[in-house]
Image (cartoon, rainbow, N blue to C red):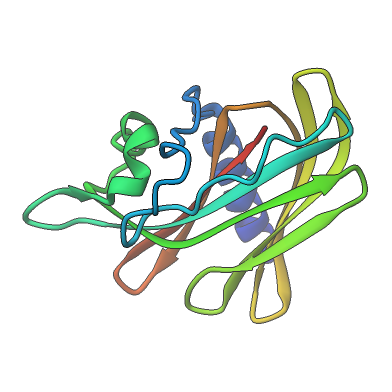
Length: 170
């Protein structure tokens, strides 16, 4: 049974990796206050030895009336490829990290996502994503993403839908 879970987890990782989002993050106008429920404004552009890392926690559900949170509009096309039709932003965290730095964001139902920056080169950031639930590691993925692009991960089944996360680095 544990072997079946591992295989399913590996398949989930492979499916999510295939769903790499190729959309740049939309930033609000300078000085504009973020709308309620919107992702916070990104910090100033980091230097070449640092990256601004964004984690967006997403609660995906199936509703009679489809809905996508305004903060998720930049990645709406990628979200629509899932079996769900409604997506609500449940967590948002933006931090500037250097190689060796990390951040952890609490999402929902005891889940958290830790992102560690391993290396920053040119237009690529190498990351380690660690999903945990109630302080137990569920999955760890090492990957490289292009700066300004989002990577969609997760798919953890909840009582009413699924938990996804979109990760980006600039």
